[in-house]
Length: 535
Image (cartoon, rainbow, N blue to C red):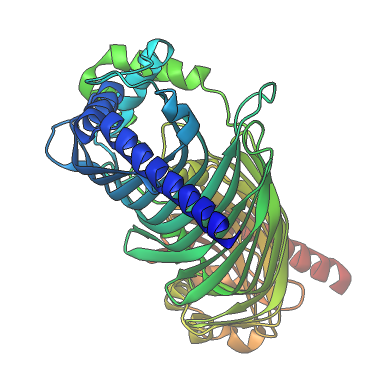
């Protein structure tokens, strides 16, 4: 009995071995390297219009088809557009026995993609997209030497040690490098309206550089049936920013939720990354004539806003911008149709670099991201909003405007002024900040109103009121005998022009005339009434 079992086992084992050997011989004879090379290269070149090459192809019954050294060139046929160390295709055995190659799994090892936005505004893959669009409806079922019927029914794609580099020759967007791993799964069922993608992408490092600023990010992106969740940590200089949220219905009508949290952030450095050159379409209009100008304008007119909508919260423990410090900064935002609204915005104010502040501010902002401009230029040109600021302390250790007023009036205390209460209303529109406020102390008060441009140009008028104890230092001529208020404070109407870096201070002539007329009338009335009362 035992001998029969041993013989049966040996026969089964021999049968399996023979079957494996037979299948291996069939697979290698049917999937010959030269035939597969012809199929793959010919299909890639036919779809892309680029030169493609493969170093080696090996076929194994268990591992599948292993392709080494894949290379797809740029349009000029010299530089690399896509490279990969290894490409593994696992196939289904039963369809192969019917002489049909069906791919069930794809594994890509160390792929590299070089993306470039060229000086004419086109991307280095634009020609492939156009060719794919024209040939997608008539793509052949098979190609190559033996014409092996080929279909891809993969449900899993694994990508390890992927690298992507992006360069913008126009200088609009920051340069970018990405290193990531991904494990993705596709499922496609009839009646579902398209394939479904699930899996995860592990971003090992994402580096962006622009205008001398570098941002490094890493994190995890989880892809579910209809949603994408992400948790990413970014470092801007020495500041760490946490980005978390999700995107619902990302394939059709994406609705994103993005929350930003940071302990400290230099906003000026972050904004510098988006301050690139204007889109080259503007340059091309001038260079290529009126016909292109009309076409570009028409394209912009017909362009529809993106479908993406987004909302979220921004919380920063300490935000720094041009020497000002905003503590406990909090804001909610909504983005839709290229328009962004940030409201409400609240923050506690303080100052650095020659300024001491204590107080709070609240307000709102809105802007648009339109075509034909970089994101920074578009935000700058459409930025609008309103803020109220209330300070209980304001000490300017180094004020160029204060220094200019001090030089004009002869009162040195104005060069480094200290105010006990400050209230301002700021209105932002058309690349200018309109301001209206009051600044008061026991020795000096101001009521500035006017505008400060984003280009630092200023045009402000204010009445400088000086306490009687400082009035003797004023160098303002004979007009001072009439310019006093009911409390005995001397009033000097000023106009401040120039720039914030180089202000120019002079008398506000219209206000001076009104003050002189008012003072003269008061003096005449005083003398007339004094004479009448004396009699």
